Length: 213
Image 1 (cartoon, rainbow, N blue to C red):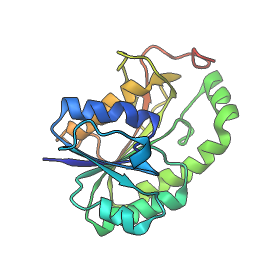
Image 2 (tube, rainbow, N blue to C red):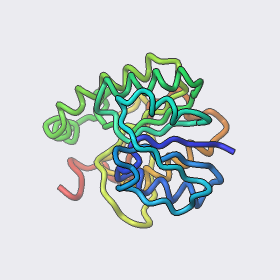
Image 3 (cartoon, rainbow, N blue to C red):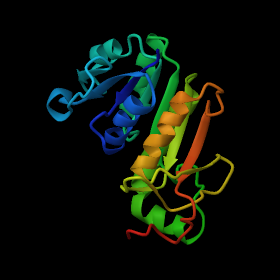
């Protein structure tokens, strides 16, 4: 049975991912977050484990990796944290990594939307180019998710994917759809997502900016 470590388990995408993993799979989940015990509630104690820690807590991070088959990182903002995670995964022979990052890190967002996106999150793009490179330079079996602008809509799990050599496909995507994609990646045994950086957007949203702006 697969065990998944969710780093940043109190994040918004994680809040949709956790129940979907419990519902759609038989995986065990470790929920790692700062002050996890006060911010998160376990619904299935037989399958969920809470871990209090941050990404600079080397001992706790290493202990969390014990028995883990895959890691999902909810936020790839900080280069030191990402390097610590890579080191802990290597030390514990954990190979599969899924990381949520932002659109624009491959200069793949074109046209009016590309200009708008850069004007809104240029500093975030610069930081996440560095963290993505650290993952891509590692020997992890990674899948990077370059996410369109995020919003919530129950029941909307529609997503489409673009590859690294393709223009980004749309302006927005629901967190529910991203959670479903992560479940799909973790459940896939064909390795079609391995060593890939994927653009993630909702179909038919190729606009100049997201609908909620």
